Length: 65
Image (tube, rainbow, N blue to C red):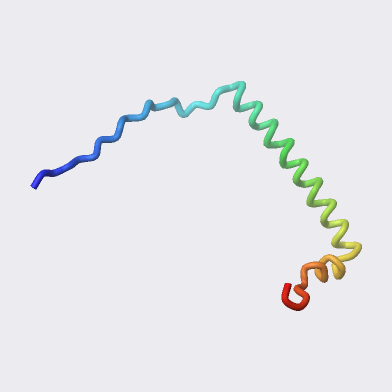
């Protein structure tokens, strides 16, 4: 019987140090996205405070839907 071995090419190792410009830009972008998500969640909370029953009723199945 012959034995087969699977050879995988080695990947180039990258330095674990983040790039200064890219890291700062990514941090700023992440902060902006979090703030936008918080704004959307605040709007959803306002709707639920005003009309939670109507919101829940819109998800109830009727008949064979």
